[in-house]
Image (cartoon, rainbow, N blue to C red; front, side, top):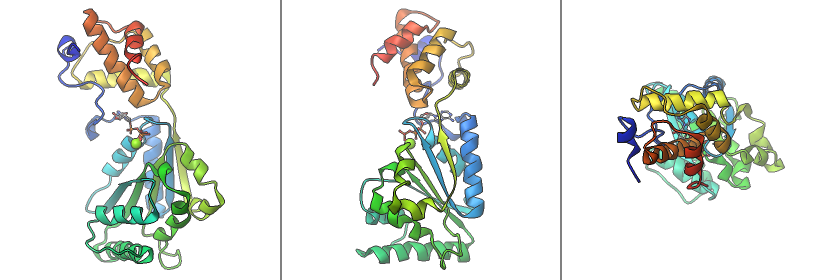
Length: 268
Ligand SMILES: Nc1ncnc2c1ncn2[C@@H]1O[C@H](COP(=O)(O)OP(=O)(O)OP(=O)(O)O)[C@@H](O)[C@H]1O
Ligand SMILES: [Mg+2]
């Protein structure tokens, strides 16, 4: 495919998946996640971040965690899988760089909890556990997970927990077996798709980040991206980048709704 970057005078790829922290756009949704993140850390509770695929959950968590100073916080981020709670414990142990391990579930839990207490009491570091893709966790993991965050009969809140995942995560917490975990959740937010105006700002933000001063997307193209993506950011990224390619192939400096349509034929 023709390189759209040279055609539009982009200094780098537009709409990249690996957006740098400093380039993340402050949206209302992101502000909502940060507020709840801070509140949960302050109280030592649990929070839930849900949203459709590609709505910006992981980016929001990365941004919120990135605001925490490493001299004060230890952020433990794991991406959930469909395995047992032992699998999750192993992921946490690896992420915390703990050299001990065991084949016993209770021993593994105690290894992690001991380290958390040590961090909180001796090193004066505040641990935070973030589990992304938590909608993948099995129900038996939800049943047990709260015990990892219980210290001294629940009187010490050493390990705030942020769970993020697709909308089904909230449904899974409604199961009776998840009730203990759900009862400890003190804040939740659901990331919706951007509005039409929000999408316009989002597209402009990325265009400017790439060093392009004149916005090549006409109004109809923005509307088409908004409609075809449902306001969801990853889909919007792919549509907008593909539309830039289609326009450059046409030799057109303006990106139209037709270019967005052409781009959409390559996507799911
Ligand atoms: N605030 C933002 N500013 C700029 N770009 C963003 C922002 N939020 C998300 N993005 C972009 O949208 C893409 C999708 O976001 P992200 O991966 O965070 O979504 P997600 O909800 O975690 O998706 P999934 O459900 O697949 O895990 C990212 O690659 C990133 O480029
Ligand atoms: Mg994600």
